[in-house]
Structures are given as C-alpha cells and as structure tokens.
Image 1 (cartoon, rainbow, N blue to C red):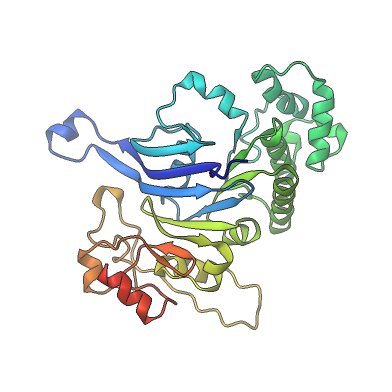
Image 2 (cartoon, one colour):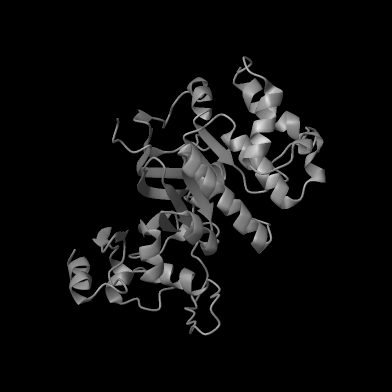
Length: 336
C-alpha cells in the first residue's frame, strides 16, 4: 500500500496578466501573482480547509489544483502524477478521481436539466453506459438523503439545501478520490449548513474521500477539517491541525480571523481583534512581512524583512513574533 500523499503541492505560483501593451510600454506592471509559492500535502481520507478573506487566493489555488487555472510554476502531484502543464486530453480520466463543487448551490446546476439528468450526466460524459442509470440515480439520491421522486424536479424547484445535496450527489457519483468544494455552505441557513457538513463528513468516512474545502466560514472549518491553511495575499501564513490552531493561533492574522468568529457561549469573554486598514493590493505588495501594514503587533523588522516559514508547535507559519509560542520560539524565528 502506498504511503505517498494523495495530493502534494509545492512552490505553486499562479499569475494573471493585467493591462496590455500600453501598460508594458509605460513601464507599468503587466501581471500579478495571485498564488505565491504555496505548498501543502493532503493525505487520503483527510480534509484540508483553505481559509482567508476574499481575494486571498483560496479559489485560485483550488482551480489550479483542478486544472481549471494554469499555474506559472511549481508542482501539483496527484497520486504521484505531475498535473501541472498536463495536456487537456489527459485530464478527462482524472475528472473521475477529482470532483469539484462550485459555490452557488442552485446556479451551479443547469436549469434545463432535471435532477435525474443532472445525476446521470457524469456517467454519460465518461462513457459509463454498462449500468442502469435509473438505478444509479436512485442510489445517489438515497446517498444524500433525498426522496426518489426528486429525480423529476428541476433546480428552480429545489431549496438551497436540496440543491446542495444534488451537487454533492453529482460530486460523488463516480466514486472520486478527492472532492474540491468551494464554499459548500454558502447561502444556506445555519441549520441547513450543519446538515450539509454532517453529510460531507459521513460520505468522507463511508467512501474514504479526501476533501479540499475553500471557505471563509470558520464554523465550517472546525466542523469538517482535520487541517487548515490560512492564506493572505496568495501565501500561507499559518498551516496546521485545526483544533490546535483554534485553541492557540500563532499568527496575528489567524488570531484576528478567529476573534471575528461569533462565540456561541454567551458567558465567554469575546475579545475581537480589529484589523486596521484595507487589504493591500497585489499590484503593490508591502515590503517585509506583507501583513505588517495591518498587524497590531508589528515591529521594525516586520517592515523590512520577510519572515521565513518556521515550525511552531504543530503549526507552520511565517511570522517574526508568533503569538502563544513562548519566548524561545520567538527568538528562534527572529534569528532565522
């Protein structure tokens, strides 16, 4: 049995062109780097959540992994196979093993197709005709907790939670190894969010799935993710075990995100860390630590010297003065 991670990403960079010929002639920048030197591994049966504010690069990273967005450099290995620059013709068989769930539960379903057709479509696309499609549709509906008669409904006849369940059914139809889910609970009521997350957790355990979750909802992260990676301006600033990070975040940005998370216990003191200023533009990245323009704990070195990724506890982060780390860890990172 192989011990290699299901998915391994290293030094991945994704760039977008901006402006045009006139920008180049004027000496202005003609591209931005939306994902900058990111790396992680995802083990079989594990869930990793990508967390960060809008524009942090989460979705761009996920689309690069799934081959929907070209990467400028770096490596993406799935089951030991390099995917970056893989020819389009070689992606089709991989689609059976890597499935993507998009953000809008209703809008991601074709309004012209019934639920029956939506669930049968993956089998038709991959030429899997040697089975009863009606039986497969019934199996998938049962798998996600929907009645058989939902097969005759159309997307506009579904609630957001029901549409998300249909999306989950499509995603697992071909027994994939990996599901990439972009904001899987977006637009759903809190009670329905919990049902969807319980469903995903159940399917992961029953089918041995691995999941890459993109979200800004930290309740989602804590309920579903084994590990989490916090992104800021296209880089990971902290990555580690979810529960360890929730108990004691080391990066100030992580602490600020967690402090903004609503606290369900009314008797617990809730100290919110307010981040000053706006997120910097990718066109004008700050010098040194890129978070220093908003960090309440920034010091002189933060403005001039970029911190190197370093282990602290069970996490890995880029910060000169990590929180909850103790003086010896801070001194070691500052010395690096």
